[in-house]
Amino acid sequence: MANLKALAKDTAIYGLSSIVGRFLNYLLVPLYTHVISAASGGYGVVTNLYAYTALLLVVLTFGMETTFFRFMNDEKEEHDTVFSVAFGVIALLTSVFLGLVFGFSSSVSSALGYADNPEYVQLMASVVALDALQALPFCHLRYRHKAMRFASLKLLFIAMNIGLNLLFFLVLGYRDVLWVFALNLVCTGVITFFFIPDVLRIRWKFDWGLLRRMLSYSWPILVLGIMGILNQAADKMIFTLVYPDTSVAKVELGIYGSCVKVAMIMAMITQAFRYAYEPIVFAKSKDSDKAEYYALGMKYFVIFTLLAFLAVMGYLPLLRYMVGSDYWAGLRVIPIVMAAEIMMGIYFNLSFWYKLIDKTYYGALFSMAGCIVLLAVNLWGIPRYSYMACAWGGFAGYGTAMLLSYIVGQRLYPIPYPLRSLAGYTAIAGAFYGAMTLVPSEWPMWQYLAISTLLILAFAAIIYCKELRRKISA
Image (cartoon, rainbow, N blue to C red; front, side):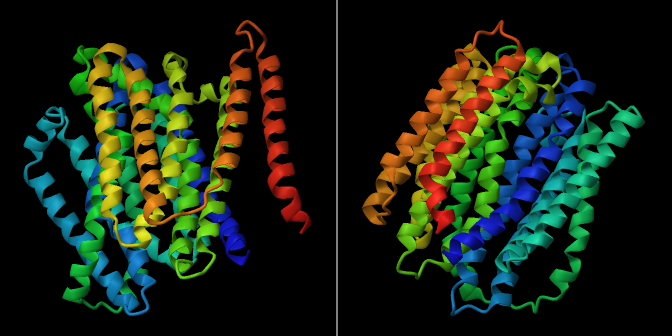
């Protein structure tokens, strides 16, 4: 019970930086989509380049975040040595990456379709490099349960980024997407500066044997991470290459990218849960009741993500104002993308079995299978159905990875997940969402919102009566 209380406390704090922080950061979406018209394709450029940065960040961190937690919880390893080796790997890869990007700037920019704007690529490469160097210091804060400092730094970045964007785009009247990337670099640099004292306090050591063991553990996680990011971002990377009309592709991608932002509350919840859950899972790996704990964690994750799904869909008539009205054509992707994100979160929770038995290559195989499905749907569907194919591709890809991980995991590391309970909550949430969609479109907004609110409260009441009332009274 103490572990569950610690998980709840840390999830709440990490949620402040992840859920609340991202929500504040998403205030930039209405800013960008109101000052950058859909027809200009400018937001499509932002969507495209940020998709590449997500992939590059996974490559540069090389799976060392999860590897760091795994070896820091090994009683045989010296903590400063683990940090030194992991940070050294990231620093080396980052240095090589920056050298290649700036040394071959023209070629790299041309290959990405930005021959006329190499500065976009250079700025985003610098952002990725600094983000990669921050990864281990942030992990160290999580390991030491310094959730408040973690949250403070994340929120400081958000506050600076929002403030500078409002200044440059609203007050000073800039419209060039260059400033989106430049301001990101400034804010990332400030946060990196705050970690310098932490890094200097480390007693730097190196161990070749530990390096080999860590790389052996991390490379499947790297492949898993690449496949995971491709599942999230491949559609945005290949869209302009596959869509038949190049001039329209960035416009369509901008519409899709902006509306996906509305659905990303599910990704926020998953990330907040992950930040708190991952260190506890490894710390609890030797306890006799670990399987029951993992099953309970999965149950609560699914319940509350279903509640979040209903909340977003119920209040979508209000949330749609997060994006400019000329982007509203893409709102129909939101329920599909949110359902896909729930499956991605379930897949993340399922993934601990192969991490705990050091068979991380299974994760790489599952994610690769999901990625192949996603790419197949996108390559076939984008020329025919535009960004709707992107939404369904993610749904199919995450669903494939989730099912494979569950089936194989129950054979090699059985965990008694409460499938009947999970299926019941999913069916209820699906029925309530179906009821929301049956409200006639000509009804006033307040009537739709009233019905949605009643359905959301009904689902919350079911959760309280079946799951929480007994525990609270106990």
